Image (cartoon, rainbow, N blue to C red; front, side):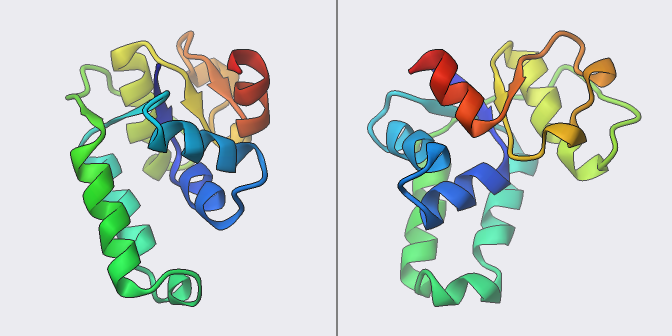
Length: 134
């Protein structure tokens, strides 16, 4: 199954393998889930993982391994949709890719994706996603 995964869920799942975000990361690692990305999303994943803050959780080599994994094991696509008037412009790539590929968007920040801008996209919290699909 393909999904678009907001960065906050990816990081949360890596830090806490016991919650719904952790289950999603496990499903991704085992190939049950494949992430849909574009250059903007991959860049955000890499930028966030490389923040100094995360050195207390992952050494530099581990972080680069994760980034390499993401570059090699995701489904790359080009957005054919442009989203306007989103509360945080940085979230636009995630919704645009979910709409382009007609896949769910999983985020820890549902309020960043109000219903009036979703254009029919399924936007779920990690818990909602796990409950609905697994």
